Image 1 (cartoon, rainbow, N blue to C red):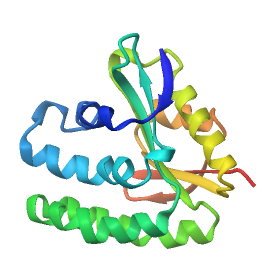
Image 2: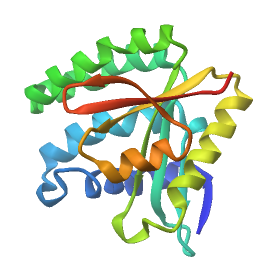
Image 3: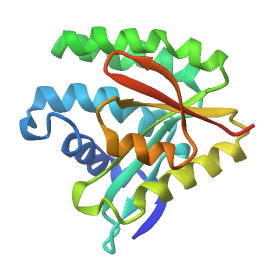
Image 4: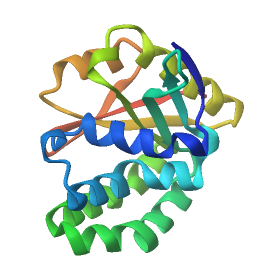
Length: 187
């Protein structure tokens, strides 16, 4: 397994991983695919690919990724203008939930967690250290860019993921309905 920077040829694989690791994996419909990828992967690879990394197998096929918004001001603007209108049309409940989360962006930015990430690895490749390598690669890149800190949201009942982030130096910085916000400062 290798960790490398995201490349445009990885686009469909990243979308497939996003769907396969979601709660809607068994319901891969065009509507679900449209709103899930709009919320959780398309912005990052479209506008901030320099802070996106993939874990690839021996055939250079992505089996996991870490996607990041290092510039959350750009993220908020483009999500609101380009991606959320699509989500509102196809899944209004998710639109309102995600819109509420975006309002918290400024709070976390003021606290120094100026970047955020999404990490997903296909089930059959978990437990091989890929998540750790992806997080390390991203954190090193963010430090090179002088990013103050990074955060993510994790389901409060996802004990395995919570332990993973805590063991990698992330601290719980907030609690929202059904989730824990984790953050890690670099400076």
